[in-house]
Image (cartoon, rainbow over all chains, first blue to last red; front, top):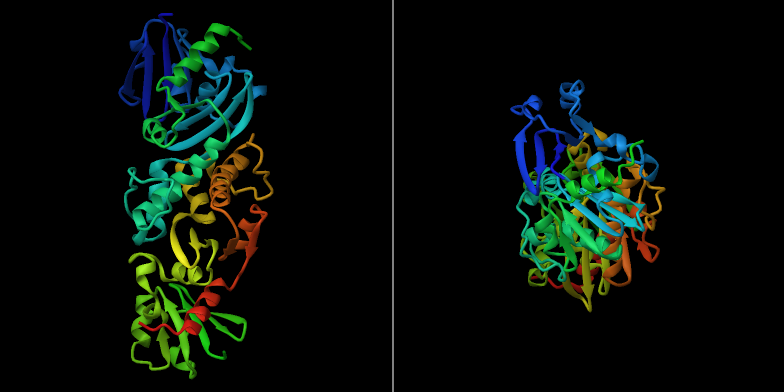
Length: 207
Length: 207
């Protein structure tokens, strides 16, 4: 396929062409600068207004079988699920979404706070808890100092639950590689969202 | 014992006498109003200045064997640990502290966000995640709507980790009863901090 895939967020436009990713700032990106066919998902309603009249932009949210998921589920979260028939999908961004697919069927999931959001929430609780996580911590041990107590408190419960959900575990998102260090069986797939989009287009099921 | 025990926080003074607890606002509480012996722990440095000259106020933080714990560990957290020789101690307040004691020895612990702090952190992430937790949720299932996805995302990892730490599990703090609904083996002990203080006084080990 030589089509362009696009993941439109609130601050960036992430384009994927022939296995290569390029990120643009939404504010500086001109949709008219692309002439080929663009298949995209978007959570940015202001951007959607700018492309509504463009005939070469295809909104993949219209191709989704929404009965498989739930109405308020994020489109980017659905796309990473579409990439996986069997497994646990962890998307570690500003939030960390964890979803389970079995035999191509969505089995539900949950939303945890992202690394930065959790760290900020600790800092808001008390100046004594305003410190950086220690990602060298050993999660198998309980902590005996404050940075470790926060890091273990954030990571150990999350990893415990993810590992209880079975295998394989696919990890993606900005903090995916960081998180994967604590999940021995995890497979990091940076382009998982684009793999989901490709798979959806190949199926060609347009509702 | 007919002595008064006191837990001094940043906003309230929690007194304990003959099995009864009474809460006062720090601002309206006059330390001179108590004439008997008061054994207390305090995280409130402004309040500490008001009682430093009072001879009937005994600071229990001076009775602690600090080598057992770590220097920046909260005094209230140490006190609930002092109450337990063997077990997992969960104190669910603005933060949720989880600590392990085995044979009277502190094995470490961790600090998770409290219920309210977690809910506020989700709300800060996105207006779409600004909703109340659903405490009727079934944590054994993955979620298929947003409030459940947030509740499962906050509770299921935490409960998973707590249950992995062994038994018995003692739960205390303002959200203790709420949290205990999800931990079948949990014993709720509302006065755990005062039990720890009593035990410390009975040992009479003054450093």
